[in-house]
Length: 79
Image (cartoon, rainbow, N blue to C red; front, side, top):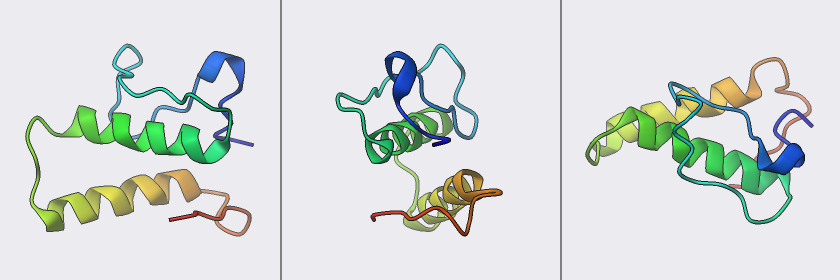
């Protein structure tokens, strides 16, 4: 799968996450955990302080759209 945590947990970088700024890394080996960590890393790269709820919502929507790009019919989020 596109967001598999294979290869020593090398996960897809979302949004504006720089390659060297992966603070959150999956402990397990599920796609869900890899995507969750990728989302956390993208949020960490995007914001220096807690955003407002509307801004957070829009950012999460954008990141989810990025994950689904080209895979909308075959991807199921469990959140």
